[in-house]
Length: 369
Image (cartoon, rainbow, N blue to C red; front, side, top):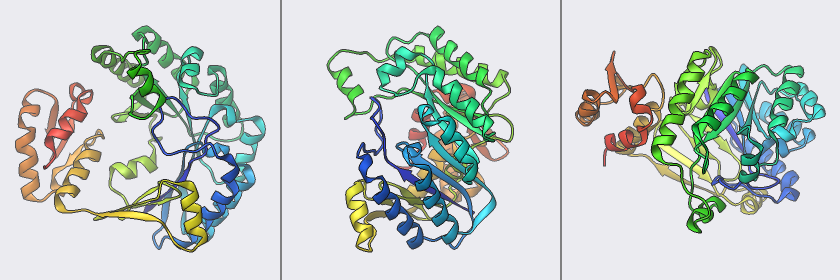
């Protein structure tokens, strides 16, 4: 079963930390939706579609008629499973009572919101448009409109943030009772306004030990509240794992639509559309797709499998590797197993709780170079 990802790059304003492809050229929304519908037709999937994910950017910046147009094309040209998980990312301030009510007329089953923090001062620092109160309002409106699968994103590791402030954020997140919580340590990426502030000495990075303490506080509190820690950054109530994101971690084929969207055939080919909305639209209007692709060799396929599966609590199934790569992986992993950072159980290699915080280091050292 394939997944369908649609990139909606529009943002009313850019957040200070964001490194994803986005644009504030809101006047291009209708032209972009028209182009997306044409790409949907060109890339009609012969396989059943099990998940649909509208990501961004800010998909909730599309109008309800534009969302109807998009979903009409998706369902006309694809064999979408009746049980498909259909997710839309949204900003809390976009979830007006009217918008929430209109969602009932769309096939959306899941909403993912970027709450980030419940501290209004930090939200202002990030250049987020919403307030902490609007997150609660949005959740209540979605519940009233029949959406019973809600996810929120949270960030920790802000400049000058204390562990006590982070604990307050987790308390408010738990009070919402949402089904899914994704959490990320604030990353300072080159080229972002946040990176410039760091270069100018106006902010400083949070030290590693404080970040570690925040991460383990998060794990302990969410697990105690009944959430399953099923991936390094993701927690879900039983039965509410993100099926779409899980398909990435399981190397399931997916089709990416829109500017900068990526696709994977499940075997040895990745492709990605041009990260330029005007060139994307122009190409579609001229009947061509502007994309690049990469054919994966055996080493890259091993590295990809290692990278995504070790993020999950199930870990890497060594039986899915050739003897050569399985032996290589176990040799490289031996000292991490001895140090208690990795565990080997029933043919699966996975991170222990102690290994989660240093997962990037562990995964990179197990790669075949």
